[in-house]
Length: 331
Image (cartoon, rainbow, N blue to C red):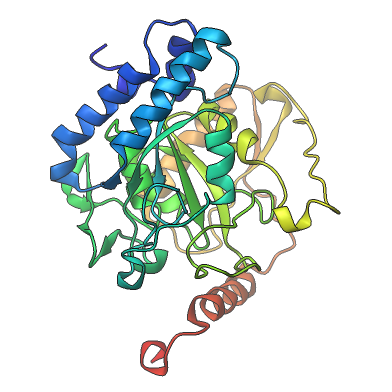
């Protein structure tokens, strides 16, 4: 049981379904690890132990009746502190939301809870989820569990670090300019930035509470310790926003192939200056793909002006981030 907290979510769910561990025991393992190691890295910034224990006991009863009653039944989880979770404050690292306690879960959190997950804590973010590190005046600085002198990244920095530290087997993140991808990379875990509109972002800060329209470019996505677990959570989260459901339906096509050799891979490394270490890692990946029989083309290029595309993206991104800021902040 010593390293159970480092198993994949899929493996932990299998243990739960086979009654090799109870949801209550699994929760206790994760809470104990948070208690012992979190003071050093400051990743988990809020706990709801009482509510989580109630949920774990209910999950154990449900598993006894039907182990497949929920795809996440009995699995302990933390959630990025930009999503509304009933029973806990949602601050997004901002002083003005220190005591804001939502009356309903964010849409993505509701899907996770409906599938039986036991939500026990919130993870740190930069203020307003607008930085590539995770520091705010409410909870302070999160440190990378692999090396406490280094950053966890942001804005889903607490999410990625909680996975790396073995505090949670799955996490929920959001991304507008790298907020899932950067911390996943910094902490050595998996993250998926979903396509815009595939997952309901309602109940996320920002925008402030009460906004109906979603923020442009912002998306929700899963973080995990394996690609298999990313797919598990992504499938649960997938679905249009509540306001669109009367007239919209999502139907993702099946994968075109089911083996690596059938795929073509294009590699584009000269659009912008590339760090030598990254270039070497990409070259290693290309070599491994070719040894697996994948057709790799390093000369193919899409009909895209990379520089113009980047300029348009930056203008759009900072237009969204800057909207509503006071003049002094804009300066």
